[in-house]
Length: 119
Length: 178
Image (cartoon, rainbow over all chains, first blue to last red; front, side, top):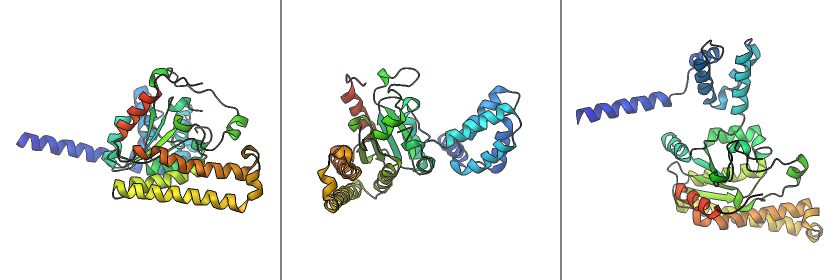
């Protein structure tokens, strides 16, 4: 019973941590990592930034204007474009889980085809 | 909708903030790896596409956080109309019960019919013209189509979204898309 309680506490703590919005310092660090020598680190940073909500767009635009590294610029442009479009989740169970966890309403667009191919 | 409705940045930003957005491909077996199933349309074709067009090829479903369908519409809508439906969808999804959502839908459908009737009554000359030649005629038709689509989607409200979506996939199985 004690082990179960510990496991549940750790799971809850992990969930709470992942649900905390990022800080400015974290976002600044991820932006800096877009120019990192390690490709995996660049990809991970981009994934984190693409998960931001669009209140971060002004900061990202500023970063794009100031960026000198060509790859960082391309990645920032990509991130900004992505944040300007609806952020569809193609995996319905994952979307439902996200809605439940965030207590947020769910909008489902049901149509033949995938988002990128939809004219 | 990608090139017109969802190209509206304000709408897209609002959607991202307000909802968790899910895209459900109702015919995944027919979708090639590059994702394209539908042909690209010219600007002229897009501009001429009628509001509400597409029928049950495009269905938008609004659910409470637990995945219960609370509102649904079908067809293509430009950004302004789609935003109106999403506002209604949000109200239904956050209503205190499925019955409260049904009540909101019924009132919404009634308001659409009233708006259509009022517009038609105020423009008798336009209503005598062929719909394709009259912007007002098209708007009246679109309002009525929206109201009708509520009725066609009534059966989904109160159901689990997963069940409804699977049902639609089965329904479309075997149907060819141009």
